[in-house]
Length: 318
Image (cartoon, rainbow, N blue to C red; front, side, top):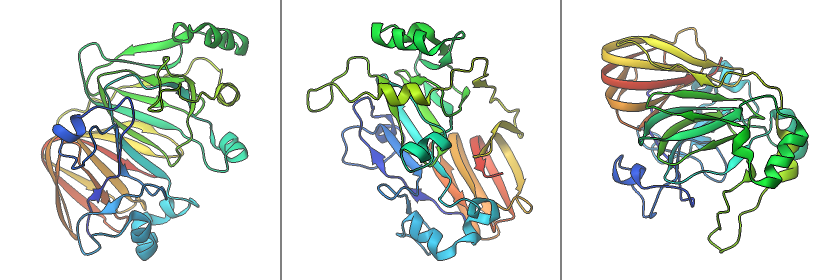
């Protein structure tokens, strides 16, 4: 089998920018592109196979056709396609929000929760984000801060740089600030509980819906987690960013040639080129990757040779 490129569904949200469209070639009639769902099996917004003999199939159709040949044993062990990978262009603040864990989400929403990670593909000077509490916080303190509009006083604010990475377990309060271009790897879920939306009005001129009660119940108030993850690899090397029950993400700094052996992995692999220009060669075929392009490698591919000069995120199931 051969690696395949996917055509990403594009999302136009209030806070989105134009970089994905004007700088990185996402073709669309949308005025702005807030999110590009690079790898999506969501029923409402599936990715489309954009290369090879199966061009034109939706990702769910492609998986139905080939099944375990694509997913591998580890991917097929889930009763749903386990990953959703997005590119996010935040021209403005995203809401302060939280995602529930699997047990809460299955009980309350009938689908899985959302643990995620962010990789900063690019950012403007002074860009920042919030992840987690900056000190031990009780439920009552949190509710008081929400009602008084002082929640950010309780949150850890990170000044970010290109190449930074952050791990956001389900239950973590977080917000992406303006001027950030982020690759987001997450569980397949679209459940978001908004805590605050900065007083912003929706397209209908009314304040957007908040989910105060649901968010309060979904928050993990345990303090002491480390969210920032070093993600700088030496040229020609591979560095693990996170390894979770949901996904493993590595960063690969390609400068010449890097060989990746997947013979014993037994999982599909997703690539996201965050910078530079690369090529992936396998026994089944080759594909080129420019900045902010993605690729899906079926589990049956045993080896890939990456060449060129650039930075690559590598994601698979463990």
